[in-house]
Length: 455
Image (tube, rainbow, N blue to C red; front, side):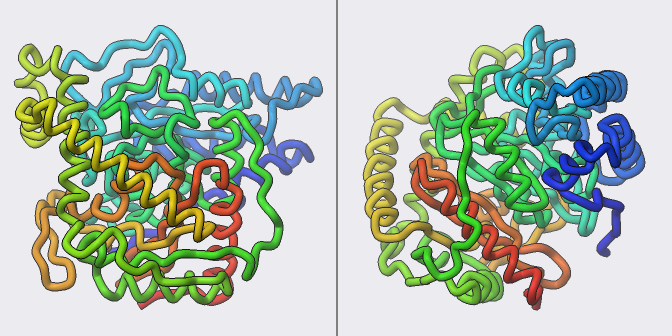
């Protein structure tokens, strides 16, 4: 049952223009954001903490600065949200857990500093799958975040609250983290842009880790242009995107079945959208190889499991009765991964990285669906895809995890709907070529606006 929610009429770029033309104020935007949050959150559970007082005070400061001629950039006065494993001074960082992990932060995480320096107004902290260790978004001390298209459906995770906050129009921009798909999965299921930058481009200082060699900080937005604005603030650098890219970019289409079982309707819809843009699309043959999908997931699971266990090991005994049983079992599995198994997986990662690097010398971009299914019902632990019953977490992450292994930028872009539920295409490029990814995303958005795709 799809639900309708009020949204910001304009995105970050247009809101910024309105602020500078004195057609609105940051105080008005933030007040509107907080009204939406309080009105919608009881049903959708996007927020773990709402900072009304701090947000309104920051908005007043933003207004005074603009009036006096101080302009901190395109996010100045814009309401945003951050995932609740990112430190904000004076507020708790719960990581979605009832355990002792939740302590009041004394200093801002580096990404929060950059947001504040850019004039952004943080309205609160968003719900996440406990410790960011899950793709479903329904295991948290704060409860499940729910899909705005149908609250009976998953938001996806682990950054589900941030995706929901943008998709429901509570904020125009939200920050999340992505270890094996935790931004792109909920972005795809909720129908918004989800950006995972290249590894280590956005600092993780002050962000509670899950698997440090896989963790990325990224964001959610309604459009690729809004995502670009947020990315430039978080990454601390400019990305110049050409206004016209139609027909100039080479796209390597990766048949998703080469990696994991995928709904053929999703594959057809996403490939159709990419092909209709006029970009030069060629199918990538033999990637990553017949029967390789299981070893791909084994590689990422081995690395993630061992690193996550060592991150959380000091707390596992003292706090285990306060940790969700499903998350605890996942953490405990990391105890069994040996140093030798980890080294073997790391060697496989190096080979995969080399394969992707070679592909990205041939193609400007790679493309494939973001997730192989539409959003499953909340609480589901198996899902049937193309007639095959799969464990829901591994299915949701099957097409995203590779790009964390190799550390390249990846973006989920809405591609249409199936049965009223969003599906998305995933764009991948080489580090340093992000402008091409944003240009292609614009082309996809233009094509969708001309002829919405659904089935």
